Image 1: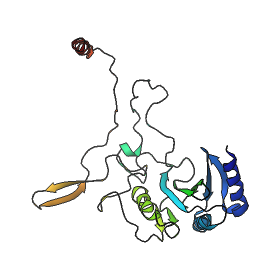
Image 2 (image 1 turned 180 degrees about the vertical axis):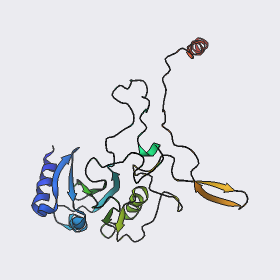
Image 3 (image 1 turned 90 degrees about the vertical axis):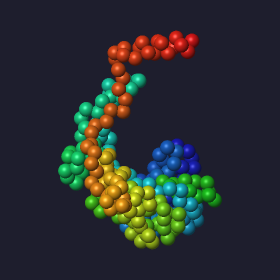
Image 4 (image 1 turned 135 degrees about the vertical axis):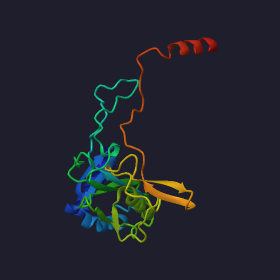
Length: 244
């Protein structure tokens, strides 16, 4: 743990007290957690207050902790040359959705499903800070927009809204930025199916592109299969001989 990071943690505790939750050093950088109702005011102070001066917002990202750490792939016995077969097929992304989180209930292993992370930089003091804010509700996650503090947050917040469905209260123009206007759902949520919800095609009769429910069937994928037989051995030997 660097001395500069330790000093920043201490200054955060001294300046903000209980409003800053558990300042800690992760991967050489300081991380703090803020309550949603206090996040805007604290981050405004982080920008303006002497000794912090986080005048630059580098990034905003959403996180979905649903089914955090769960996987359908067998990794304990995976070989060093290939991938194991996904035999369970229990993740909602690979199966048809029958409930709010799919066939098998997706839960948050951390106790809180969504998180918004802010990466702050103080150019004047050469220090970085990671801020985490967890929306209070999973069904309708909302945090305050920080566009009035850092104008660059405009597109970052639109991206988190588009991909995760996180709402940013006070954003001047909160609409999709990466997916199409007719897109259904939020593709980075854990309960979003890999095949999607809608597909587009050109309708000859109407003379235009139309939207319709996705027609392909979900399935457990096999990214790579390592064959144990010798079906390709003869061809390999022939190619090696010709190259030699």
